[in-house]
Amino acid sequence: MIFFSVLEIVVPVFFLSLIGFVWVKTGLDYNVQFVTRLSMTLAVPCLIFVSLMKTDIKPENLMNLSFATMTVYALVTILTFIFVKIFSLNNRTFLAPLIFGNTGNIGLPLSYFAFGAEGLDYAVVIFALMGIYAFTFGVWIVSGGGGLIKTIKEPMVGATILGALFLWQGWETPQFITSTCELVGQMAIPLMLITLGVAIARLKPHNLFKATGYAFVKLTICTVCSLLVAYWFSLSHIPMAILILQLTTPVAVTSYLIANKYEADSESVASLVIVSTILSIVYIPILLLFLI
Image (cartoon, rainbow, N blue to C red; front, side, top):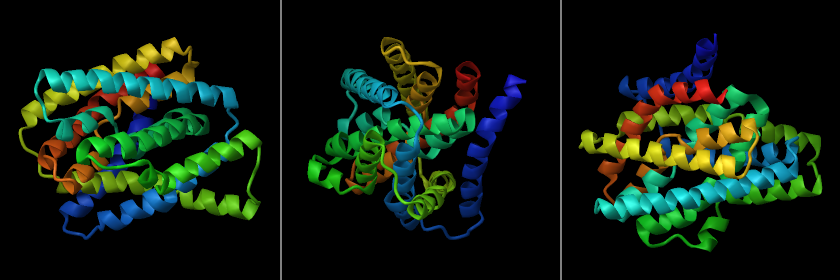
């Protein structure tokens, strides 16, 4: 029975990605840049803001998860940096993809389908913190740029700060604004999943054998670190499960887009995205068997 419960969680996620994949392969047009901008500028910020504002989770529990998230990313960063240096890999190409997972396209829907609204609330916190880290340290690694001012301008960052403020003060927006934000935020998950499938269909990978090895290293580092930190912070069942699930998501498509933008080895990153996403079809159901 638990196996079928896991299937009910993962099938919608990968089926929506498959829609995007088939859409492109049949020759239909899909403007990834526009949809990504729509998602990251409007839909995702609305989802983050409403989730934080309306959450029933105690502020101290969210604070504990936030500190756990920052700790685990620091630990993952250190271990990944050591791995990259030992094997003489290019920092600009490999460091950021091996640190940051697809906590948005895959992590948010999986958390929602597996653990409901409470799981989504926790997942949004991790996703928001990861996004801030990725758009500062991640971009700095790849490009040598990416400062604080640029990060503050990201709608996702503003939505996180505003949502946290409303949560802390116990404020709520008027119902018509809340309903509008909820409706817009509901676009985020299906749009991100379909776009993931589209992006994978258009990627041009190479050297898949090495990419497979790197993907296993990423999975191992993130799994061990998230487990250790979850126990260290004494997280309860659902936040612990969400932390592990979010950290072990495959390489994000945004890593490829950033590498391409700043002229790193985008083809190697594309290989990591494809291989790690394919591997996740196998390991995520197994992981969920233990987490739920």
